[in-house]
Image (cartoon, rainbow, N blue to C red; front, top):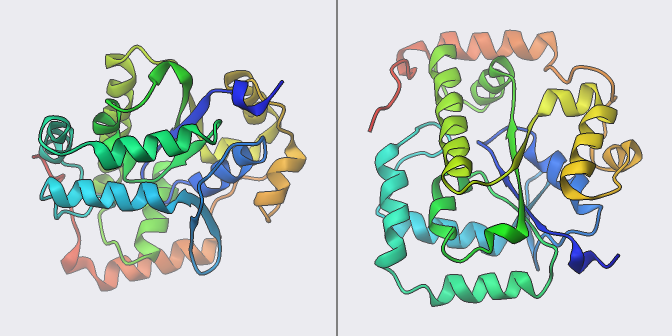
Length: 250
């Protein structure tokens, strides 16, 4: 079977969810990640840089100046979606056509939870497979705190839950089947998770493929070390006065 017969993949998630590992794994099944991908100092994100730039342009056009990594904004969701009828779609359509020349492709950008309702106009939804990726609330809080994103655990948990709800609502609104994976399950029980992925994508990925993109021990819960938990608590206490402890409701 040619790769072009496979459906494209869109991963929807918040930031710091392990989505780079999942995207790298799926890309090994022949999915196109872009002409150029965004690389961080210590790892490859597998994020199409052109998609990132267009999502940032949508933020600018919607006059969104918030922090999508910390704030859930219903108003911003509506403002970005409303751009469907307010902006020239030629650049977005051209990007979509370019992606389709390289099918099957895979999209992953944490900004997509805010922009996916805009992209719906340009996507052939029936030719896409969707994945919702989440992470355990505690590990999300630790990772955010280590990056000096200071929130209470409750705020972090509620922020993640609201993004998850918004993504699920998008799937339900459009009657889209999707696979929900939790990052910890992928690492701790890769056989089960990869079997679910293969059924959802009609792929033939293996645990060896995961080992090529995840360079730590598998079959273990990928929780941060005790020292990182302690460090996160110390950072939180030092910056306690700057914490976010009331969910943003817009």
